[in-house]
Length: 319
Length: 209
Image (cartoon, rainbow over all chains, first blue to last red; front, top):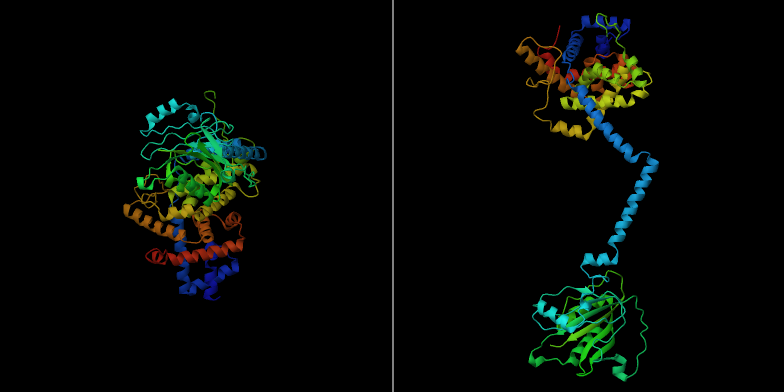
């Protein structure tokens, strides 16, 4: 046998796992070959070293530790068993419960009133009658004395059968009062009964009742804004008609339609204007209106609905 | 027991009898099985993983697995062979786990290393007579342990089962699922690798005549 062949058998030779013939051949070779003998001795030495390694014992409390771990694991498995087994029954039930909870939460969050509350917009119902409860002049005056030094006294009346948001304009230095909204839809009424009359654009132009608008209005929301007109320098005093004209221009610029204008019966000065504008132009219009006057309250926010058009009612306060 | 009566000498039941008792519903006998094999399994785990805590965790994992599966044991091999098989697989999986690799890198200085004489929790089966001899033995043990740990999985398994646990080729074949020829050849290669790794150690007075 060659040394390479012997070398391959050394491991089995060491363990006595060779057949008798090979065993004798290896033994004879080792007696004559010094290299193979050294390799065998090295292997023997290795085996002895491995055999001399200490036998590491388990800790004394191994069994106790094992019991603790098993108890914990079995507690967990018991819990899982209680929660999920039988899988075919409990998993679908839990899934259904989770879905129901999600739907409930989703519907609560997306309820319009709650959305308004979240967004800081007054809600339609119940407790939002503040402004309308201030239906008497004395009440409102009392409130305004308390709230602001500026004597802006207005009695807000519902105007249109749409959900409205009421804002009243104050001088900028004054603290804005709480935003309120009306609670019920009411029929349209003139702003100050017996003192005002309505004129629609067609009447103004030709004295003829205009055709009803054919433009499709998808649930328009009517917003009431009260605008206190700015006191311009004496040289640039704008007459009420000029202001009205400017506002009409603005409405026309945003592709809106002036529905009607209210005038005071005694002074014949414009009191308010009703218009319909595209919803996306609402912000732009508010900005422009602020150049002419100051809102009693911040411009009402438009709800997140996909509104196409808005009806706005701008009421003027002449300083 | 009445006074004066000599308790009957009951033969210690073998593993198979304990397993049958367990399967019959006497789960308390499992403790006896644990006490019988815990040291061997612990030593195997320690030699595989090289860390006392890891070995402890893994050895416990082995017995937990065995406890869960013991009712399904069909006596196709001896209980100890099956136990070793579970232990080897548990250790191999542990070595593969990311957690083990991370811990191996970050192995704490206060790890319970058998070479650390200040570690009170380790118990050696024998004691060296002199401190110098003890120290020398520990150093050699550490080098050998490191060399064994550096072997790849199957070679490490062969060395540990054959030389540390002292199992026969047939038992190793049963545990690993390799046939006898494969066991022999893998063991020969593992020894050869280990001899190369420990060449310096074996030459320096380690060769035995």
